[in-house]
Image (tube, rainbow, N blue to C red; front, side, top):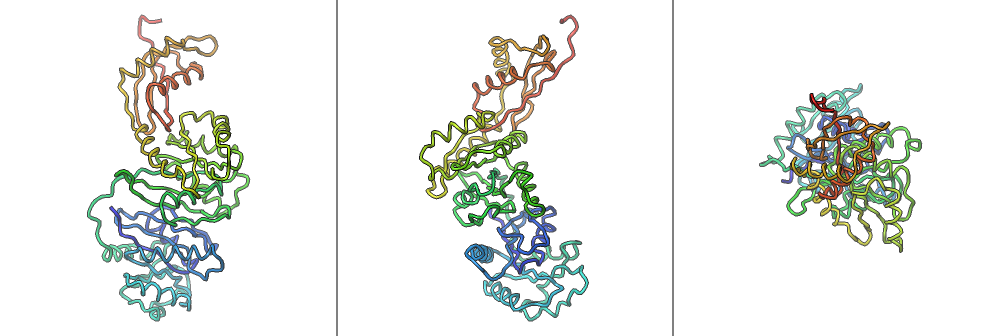
Length: 434
């Protein structure tokens, strides 16, 4: 079900991102003293009652890049059920504030005036803002920093927006992960079929985690577009560091991660590191090669991927182009297939047949001439699938046999795109056994 949309608009540095974080009760939008920190429209689900959209600060568009930002703000206003015009209460309303208020009121949508930063000295009285044309009864004095007045604002929002009639179904979360300028936002736009994220050739354009929900074959999918990660030594202090944290948090939040690699640039250790973090987090993974319209030899790309990501033999590879749209929607089918694999539950009897066959084919080897004895295996969890092998002396079991057992399990069952986890537990020897 589509939730009501509430849009935060206003000039840069009015505290919109801080207000979104306060209403969401967690840090979703980047907050910094630098003006214009928010450039994409960032959304947060508030108590399953409405979606709050934090837009970039309105200002004069100096170039095509800024103009695309302003277009997004206009889109947010047009799609909103309620508009929150947010101003810094310590500053007298300017001509620009008046233009913004006029634009909001012209939309014929309900408009609240939110006077933020009331905790600061020199906060102006409410009557100083009457010239904006918004009624005092629709004006709220708040402090996003201290939380003052935020509950009153939330109750005011609840009184205006339409009520949700049913609980939204749990969406499958697909995160786009990769280095800066690898084409995440272009792919995001192709998947969403609208200009939700800003596409620019500048590195590091996306700094927040941007989201959009779609329906595919009756299933709700939420796509997360993250800021690109550089090597730790090359990250700038401040905003870019915040974005790196959000990318790593997006990996933790996602069900499946699409690791994007550039077809025209060599794969780096950072790509491999990101793949390792996705696997360690137990998330589904698909490798997406972008910009394939710019290369002629795709077989060479696949060979390089097989070599560089030899620890990801279970991850499907998709060759895409956001320019031509090639294979873009194949990601949706793969996401559903990987999700099914992550939820796969196997019978204990079937698992033990595989274990016994593995033992017959290749006797378990241990360290320092020990003889580990696996006895039986059970599945204890899904998402990711987790298996516990019980036996004697398993603490000395050689890693190569563990890999052999995993391969035997993958041969028998389609664990496409998902890591599978193992624990090896030494049980106390039964009396009479060696």
